[in-house]
Length: 271
Image (cartoon, rainbow, N blue to C red; front, side):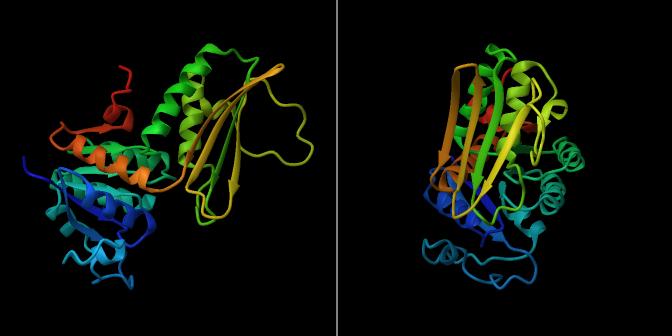
C-alpha cells in the first residue's frame, strides 16, 4: 500500500512541528511538505530541522496551492482566514483537509461545508481521542441528569492562546446542550462579573483560565444539591492532538466527499 502524502500548514509553529514529528513516526504516512505565512523567517528552512527530527531535504514554502498539489492530505491548525482559503484550494485539488483550527465563525463553517461538497474535510475542535470520548460522556450524562444539576465548563490553556472559550470547551457545551435537547446559544453563560444575581436555572456556564504552557485542561461539572459529578481531561503534550490529526488524515484518504468529524473517525458518531 502506498504511503499517504501529508502536508502541514504552519509548519514552524508549535503545533506544526508536532505534526511533522507524528507524520515522520507514523506507519502509512509520509511528509509531503509544509507551508508558512509569506515573509516568515522560516521560509526555506528544512522542515525536519525545524521539528527536531533531523534533515529531511524538504523546505518550508509559502505556497498553499503547491502544497495541495504535492499532498494527499493537508493538516491545518492555523487561523480561520487561512483555513477557509486553504479549504478552497484543497477542494480544487480533491485532497483531504484535516482541520483543527478554532475560532471559526458561522460564515467560515458555511464556506468549509461548501468546500466539502467536492472533497473530504475532517474538522474537530479537538483531535484527541480522550477529548472525543469526553464529548460522548458529557452528552450521555447531560441526557440522564435533569435541570436540577447545573452545568459548568472550566478550561485552561497556555498564555499564548488567542480565542476564548476554547473550541473544545464550546464543543463540550454543545454536547451538554444536545444531551438536554436544548440550544446552547439560548443557555450559554460566558461572563460573570459584579452583582450578577442568582444562577439562572438551566444555564451552561463557561470559565476560562490562561497561563503558563498548559496544553489544554477541560472539566465539565454537573453540580446538584449535595453532590457533584466532574468529567476531566488534561492534555500533557500537543502530541496527542497531532496524533489524532494524522489518524484522521489516514482515515479520510479514499472517503467520499463530505464534512466529517473525529466522531466519524473514531466510530462514535450517531446516525
